[in-house]
Image (tube, rainbow, N blue to C red; front, top):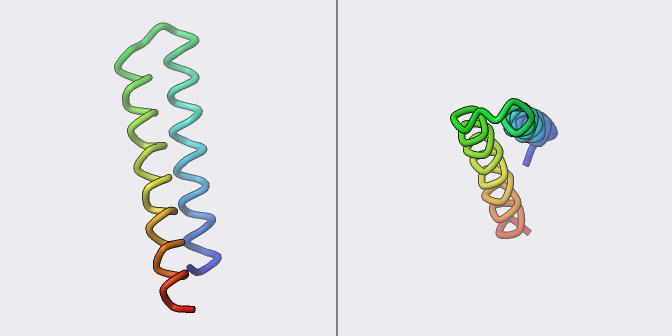
Length: 57
């Protein structure tokens, strides 16, 4: 996994976390769900990239 991909996935996960926490603070369920979905998607991408790296070795 390239460093750029790692940073991109980490930034996407952080953005999702911020959205979820903002939704929690404002009691906005739509924002909570959107943030959680973005974070989960980024986490899955990161896991997929790590799996690809493991098979390369």
